[in-house]
Length: 136
Image 1: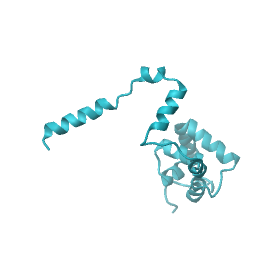
Image 2: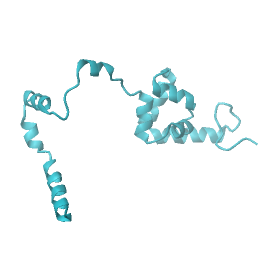
Image 3: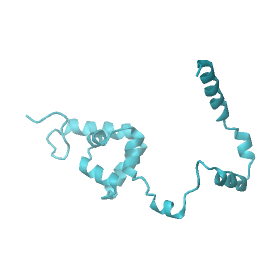
Image 4: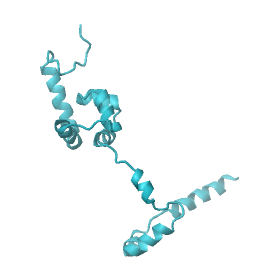
């Protein structure tokens, strides 16, 4: 295949996928529903498929929103890695205090990170605040 043919196909694909928002806004709910049902590439979910769906745990959503690994999130926000994994896999649910911490992290991640870092710096002997450097 010649390069010019590839370019024209790619160009056609780009223009073919542009959404006409004005046309879409003019459609009624019934027209939108009918178009969705007629789409062979994306059929609606059956009742059985809907029943099998599970919501993403809040702890995982917060971590993914920040773009952190489980280990990174665990270290930064002082949450035991095994606990975080249990929350994310649905084996356990966070208690009220942990949910509050997750809500704070979700709303103000930089502030919570800074406050925890300050607390670690102030209380190097506190057994509940892990040190960032190895003990001597």
